[in-house]
Length: 428
Image (cartoon, rainbow, N blue to C red; front, side, top):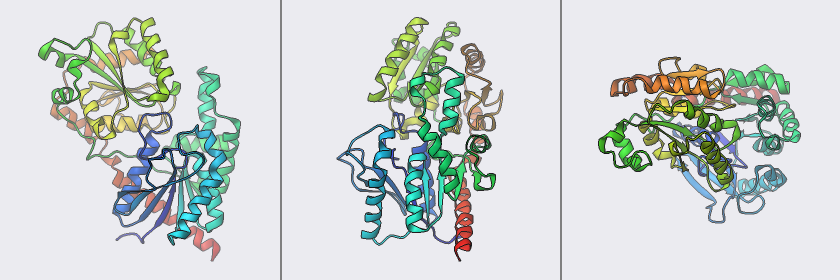
């Protein structure tokens, strides 16, 4: 084995990595944790992911893959609670984690926390265990607030100042910070005074075995898309209808309202916007978006399908003609990687690392903002292309081969080894 074995405690206090993707607090971070833990396990490293119990039916231990498991700990009531409320139960989370560790005679070389709430728990544990602590924020409160203010997005949804002050404190106390983009590194330094030497840039990845190009017609038949409104009773003609795909949480920062408005510029095309994401806690937001679609008279062209199983997303990407990411903010842009891995082009705003991922004019377009007419213009360009064939889908897919989770895990291992060696030398 090229690396000595690492024993890693991963923390995901507020969000369960096996929760339903697309709900309010479960998204790309959950994918990241699962995939990285799995890849680390394949290389012989031992990874325990700790999260809180979200449901009384949760088993305490789930074996995720070779050497990687998920452990549920009680922290507050055994139900879904607002993520900010989780902060009040972090000491209980840490206490139960330490009890579990002692009862099972476990020892860890380092801590890898995800999101600021987990990083707070990680600070307690780094002091208790005297091991290095690496954190990854996934989103930054100060950046989200700046974007909301700039774009006049729902003031009530702003991140509390307490989160921002805590993140500023965490970047000083943690041993190392991993970020997915150079842009986020700059933001950490600008907003929180982080030291450049404590930050490493490691992109997110994509499961190239799961996300691959499937036959478009067969994918649509599998999903029953021929049964959608405007696609009924039209026989094979329904296979020529254009499908625009949105995948993500139903959140104002995702800019879905701008995409719905963009449809009003595309009335000359027979199309369908398919929205994947949401859940029972998103019904109010979905109803507001339905009303918006009515205002722009495009309600018949929008279908909210709710949550989808992660394992089935490749069918949705393959069935679509274009995937759109109209976000105001993304820490990276996992959806773009997944779509391109399935051979489907992407139209996106200039967020995360999408300028590096999408090849302008070839695998899609990156726009300076999510103005509806800009979105519509580039969507129209892509939909005007001849139907994607196997060769073009393969060429699109090849552009993201370097983002395999295997390569990402290797980069994380290198960071862990450097941080661990530095820590050991400082205490020896």
